[in-house]
Image 1 (tube, rainbow, N blue to C red):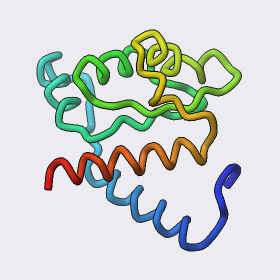
Image 2: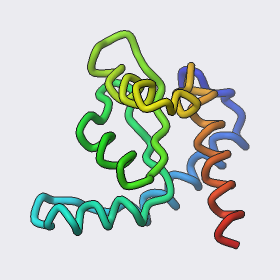
Image 3: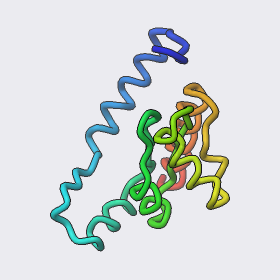
Length: 118
């Protein structure tokens, strides 16, 4: 894909990471109370923002709950919301400049969390 190194090894690592992520994704369908919703956010390891349409209220909720959020802004306003929120909160180190940096940052944060939990 655009911005990826293209090696088979990289795609395999990314694919296995996505499978692991999919297995722990919480489904929030609007039936939970706000307290339950925030409790679920607190249990997460990392919030991976989508580049085309960023999180907005959910990003604020995740940060408030202590869940690190990684984003990479795009040119459209809908793709810059989470970066604006992170910048405003003094968390600009979580804003990636491109897809390679986004992947690298997400990997470092995930590895760091695993080390702390070990």
